[in-house]
Figure 1 (tube, rainbow, N blue to C red):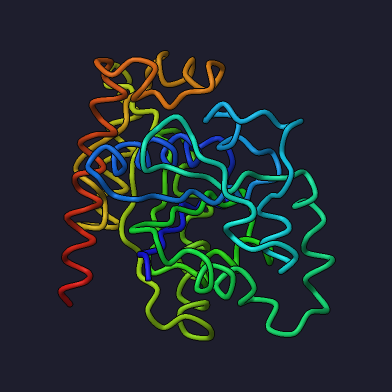
Figure 2: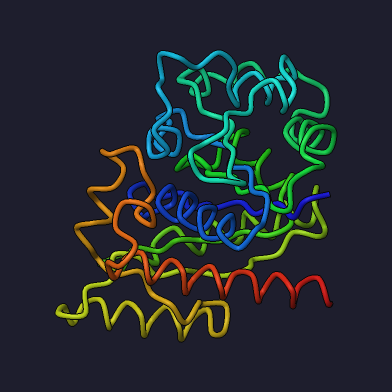
Length: 259
């Protein structure tokens, strides 16, 4: 079985998708076979990898509802060892369809157990809400990475997310762990970023990655070219930060497996 990592935050615009596709790209560059599951109805992870929305046949929506297998929905990207299950706008209504299903919280886990055996890692890009779709991701996952934007009120809502993670761990998934919190959109010229970092590190301690992701125009530009920033501009500060972050993620994975 692959290791499954959910990238989640109930707040939108914090860098979940960017973190997902760039960690996946860096993992793939080390030889890991990586699958990204795009569970956000907006489909930003799919767009970030240059996948034509009009050309999508099967999606994470069908996989979640058990209508398609993982192998039927997988799309290979231009990055070797990196494939993706693209999103669909239909995911916005998936909660209504899941609500009456038996084992509704385990639908994604069952699909991945059956169909993702050939991967080393599965990264799940979660929607910015605690819906049944996100719950499915957390039930399926071994670990969670939480991107946290370095702005005012950054901690608002994250304590609720941690409580939700603990509830899901208690009720559905006893092996679920918070792998770490990554600070994103960090502006070293802004005292506020440093204040937020201090608050987050005081609150979460060693769970916060040492690497911070800077506010970088190349990161913002990359999705419009259908590329992760690691392919768009390998030498920019954003790319180098994601390479460093991926190293930390892989080291923590080894630590979790050793426990």
